[in-house]
Image 1 (cartoon, one colour):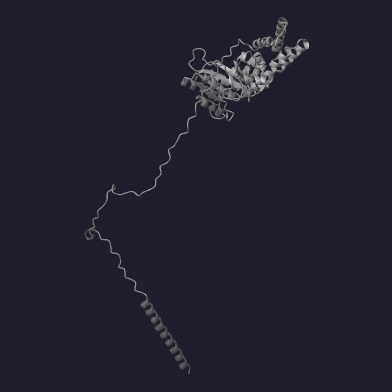
Image 2 (image 1 turned 30 degrees about the horizontal axis):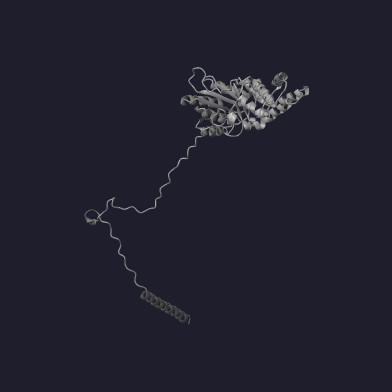
Length: 401
C-alpha cells in the first residue's frame, strides 16, 4: 500500500515539472516574437603593422595661416592714468606783507595803543595816571625794565611838549614805541652760506610742542620761494607721526623737496641728509624742522644740541629760529632762556600774534634773549607769516587817526 502512495506522489511531481517547463517555453517565445533581435557587432579588427598595414588615406591639410581663430570679445584694459602732479602755487611776495596784514594785527593789538592814548590825553597827568600807563604796558607783557624806560621817556617828552593835541600824542607815542621795539636791529633771515663752504644756507627751526613749528617751517619755505630761492625741507621731527607728511605737503605746494626718514628714526641723521642732498641739488636754502620738546626735559634738549652739532659737520648753521607762541606771554620767556642755552638762537618767530592783545611780548623777548623778532604769524592762511617790520607793528598797536 505504501508503495502505491509513493508512486502517485512521484507522478504528480513529475507532471507539475513538465507543465512548468511548457509554460516557461511559451513565455520565452512570446517575448522573442515581440522584441527585435539585437544586431550582431563584429569584434574590432586587430591593428596591422609592417607589410600588413593598410595604406593611409591622404587627406588635404590646411596651413596654420589658413586656420581661423574663434571670434572672442576681448576688451582692452583701460590705460593706467598717473595721478596729476600737484599744482605749484605762487606765494604772495614777502616784502610789505606785514603792512598788508596790518588790519588783522590791529584788531587784537589796538587795545594797547588806544589805552595809552586815552591816558596821555588827560588834561592832568598825575602820578596815578602814570601808574595806570605802567599797568597798561605790563599787562601787555612789555616787561618791567622796558616799561620803566618807556614811561620815563614819555614823561620827559610830554613835559617838554606842553599842550598835547591827539595828533601830537600819537606821533610822540609812535616814536617812543618804535625805539622800544628796536628799529635798528637786523631782522633779516640769513639764508646765505657764511664763509667759503660750498653748500646751501642752513636754517634750523626749534621750539616747544604746540607753537606751530612745523607749520612755520612750511610757511617760511613759501616766503623764501616767493623771494626767488630754491628750498629743500628737512623733516627732522621724527617722533610726531604726521609731522613729516605735514611738512611734505607744504613743500609740494611750492615745489620744494622734502627729505625725511623713518618714523622714530634719528633726527640728527635726517638733518644731516637734508643738508647733504640740498648741496648735491644746488639748492639755495635748507630748512630743518626739529621735534617739539619741553624746555624742562634735559634729555630732549641735549638731543637738540646733537642735531645742531651733526648739521655743523657740513659747516656753520646760518640761522637758528626759535618759534614762540605769543599767547603764552611771560612763560614764553622761560622757554626762550632754556633754548638759548642749548643752541645759539639768532632770531625769533612769534606765532598767533593776531590772537592776543599782549603785543608787548615782542619787546620783552628781544630784551630777554638779545636777538630780534624776525617773523610773526598773523593767522592760519598759507601766506600769513610776515617779516617783522617795527613801524608797521607800532602803527597796528596805536591805530590810525
